Length: 128
Image (cartoon, rainbow, N blue to C red; front, side):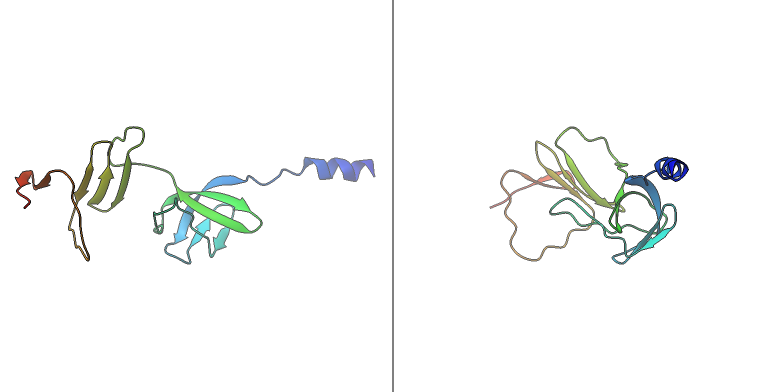
């Protein structure tokens, strides 16, 4: 009895979070940690959607057969506290305390309201 209790106590609890590698990207993706876990759910902050690509290193939070990949931040630019950068490839939306910068091709469907000055390729535009 004593020996079996000692063996039971030595078993290490699985890590609740670890780094893993995405093996299948997209909505019904898979991530590899100590083994491959399929149908990994991706959790993002409200208002932000992201789908991991294969071979990306992600944070995996484990719990009750729920595996949640989250990407380790590696911003292409330095951010001050409170700033937000959303990027994919060469396109960016950068929100700072003083304004919003959009880099890349922009397609607009619907109304756009701009308060303040509008600059296109560094040139101030006259807005009626």
